[in-house]
Image (cartoon, rainbow, N blue to C red; front, side, top):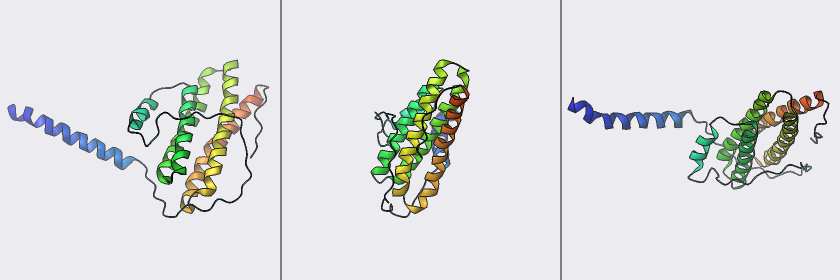
Length: 192
């Protein structure tokens, strides 16, 4: 009996190491070999939607805690806020040359944007839902604007990943604007 109790800490450490290994192995990692391409001249689109400044970024030691908090159940507004924070954080990382990490954060941003869209279904038909759909459609346009500015600067081998990330705000804009029009309201203009 004493040997079994003495083996418990060893067993606990072994299980902890196994869990950490599984999490690290399961996480997606990108490695892009090419340097960013020079930015070609593109037309600038401006969307009238303000993005928040992140308090905690992926480079901060508290980022894993924030990521755990973000995994909890949220409202549509909270998902949208998380999406906006991650978009800003991903762009900042990309601008610092941390392409792989930035792309992972941008992917998560668009996942949260999709969750914000999915969460509006719970509201049914209401004035608050219509207002949020308008905000969501503006946010999706802003997300697309930011991603469009990143795309030409990205290394060639990362552009396919960023293009795939761009699909999410496109779909969300189409869905939310369609629902607004079906409700007899006006959707934000599509500038792309």
